[in-house]
Image 1 (cartoon, rainbow, N blue to C red):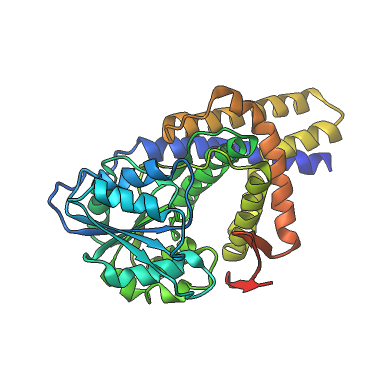
Image 2: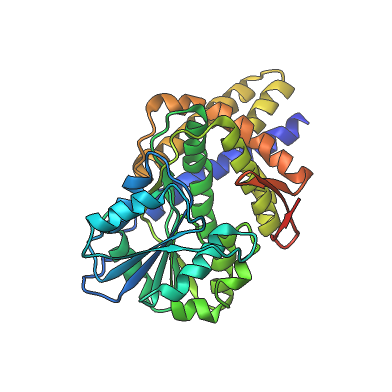
Length: 377
């Protein structure tokens, strides 16, 4: 067993080095030159449910873009949703912006985001469509960069990596570390190893003709990973999925530890179903767990001490380089001390993901079918 753990630990160490090199290369490349307004019109879809203290600044970031013309469609399922007064206030504050607040009461499938998007789509004035989650904050150049990338020949969908914003709780700090140290490096490695055939749901841009070409939003109605499925359909249609070296921000600073673990387990089980071989290979990334196991199994030999130290250094370097240099995040230095805890929790969740297909989403239990669809429990 000691030799097995040694092999896995060395494999994990090599992965950390490759991820570091990949991050440096990917984020070192300049983004496309921004589109100069006026350009082709863009409609932004913002499906919403409820609000928190950070909803306002997230929404305002989309209302102050250095691009025109564009339209913003806010979609809310519940006519009594508490976010509606804020939306009415923003509409008055930005009278020159094309902005509509739409109630989307129909339940068109099990995925509420897709259900709202399907009801927003007929109201879009323009053929370039941007889909953005409620908790996403972007810079004023966001639309210009997305349009410039989407207009490149052969590109069918554009998506962006993201970072977590301010973290005020243990759960939020672990979530930010997971994004910086695990998720974004794995996306960049996938980019160089096999190419991107999926989207990141925080922000996506697609044209209406391309969306029609891949069957529209209706086929995504019951999928949990609607972003993965949309990117896959675009790639299967022979078009490129473009990942921009431009990070947006997600704001959920008060996430609890329970919510973090539930989110990561849901993501793990969804990833395992969508990309089973890739997810199994993802197990090699748990370098700290394997080096610790080798340390214990070998009786703390000098080689085990070296492997453990090298792994800790590389994990710290990868997390800090990804968060601070690549994603330009604001995670405080003390939060990086949680990295070993996060790594051990991540390995446990990786193992737990193989023990079932049950997930909890928006307080509702579901089972994920082998093709990635939701089944109510």
